[in-house]
Length: 291
Length: 271
Image 1 (cartoon, chains in turn purple, cyan):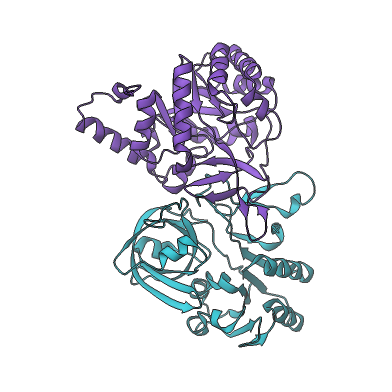
Image 2 (cartoon, chains in turn purple, brown; image 1 turned 120 degrees about the vertical axis):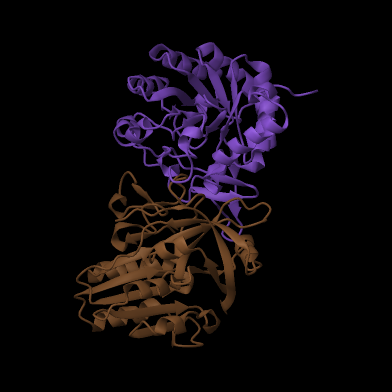
């Protein structure tokens, strides 16, 4: 990757949505919205709620399915000169590898991010995210069908994220990305009803940054493959915290909704920071936490 | 349809006017947005210096003055975000994404455009009137509010419109009751050929109008309001269910990208 800046799955569509705002080729890695074997309509509305410095979502992975993705979304992605990672989810361990196997024939795809962590789908999601054996097995199956990089995206909603991290490392993942959203709930006090149709959803945004950072720190200490930090990054300074605790790259998520040009701004601020601090390459700060 | 040149703009605050109870018209200067705005389009405004607020706030484009490069939004104070906006003063810059969404379309064979607006649902229509003002088309407005203090824009609209019928729920001005009743009576009286409805307002009103338009077989377009985190199709939060999927597996469209204007019979309204 040309830089450690990535965009988080589900916050950047299939990149086309951001074409008029940013130079997509300046982003180190683009992670697509989740692709599943069959198409999915997504969850009933209301799907989102704003909370203090954060947002809850329960979108439910709406997507056109892998064949629809190849037909409708790939033509645009093909034109990009940066790395495109396809985020993949499945109801069963086999479905993860089926989707990857189909996509692996396409040159455009640089690698895969396995969504072991969506809190908003009823089927499967939870067992992949919280059971180390299932996560390991799904990673192994995907490993068998591709030589390309595999990133496993982990949920923070577990007792030990380090344990899941080890499991996917054993399964053959090349990196982990962490964290997906935290399970959250918001109530409308006028109606006494939950603000989301699915009652609970996933919390993201600045509100989660310190807890996400702690999870990334825990992972860095537990595993030897690279960790990609995610959670509440709205500025380069936020990203820098992740690099300092040992993340080798980072993903920008919710900030894309608010400022669709945020990736470019973070890149500019990163270059400025390096210049001002006599840093030749941003890699120098990775893991430089002083304790 | 031509594609919007959606971008992030820095618009200058020109004026803020209190036009009705807790209701304000904010005039902004941004020539590109002003020129491109079509009735139904919206902008997504970043609320400046407001701790804890994450999302931008979406507003219909209310009106434009293309010569001066101005456009207006109309809003009611409902929370922290809109409360912040009334503190803005002339000369300040606001970070705005727009123009967003699709727009109302007038069919070739339409001879009368009937507007049905409830409360702040009046917001997109002054621009509508300006945009579609033609000599061969009659425009009739049905506008309902709770009480007379909520009435706004009547003067601006009167110059473009044949007739404005308005109702207040408490009878403090205009007819007492719901605007949908008045509209119902009107539809009963006229020949529906060449009539097209344009609707915006609260959900209960939309449900009533939808049922009426379907039973009368009259063409109707509705502008929907929905929570949105981005406004340009990335978050997929603003799902609207398609009527054809009322039974079985749901199908959704996005209010921000596929809308906010939909054919009324094609979508379902959430409770």
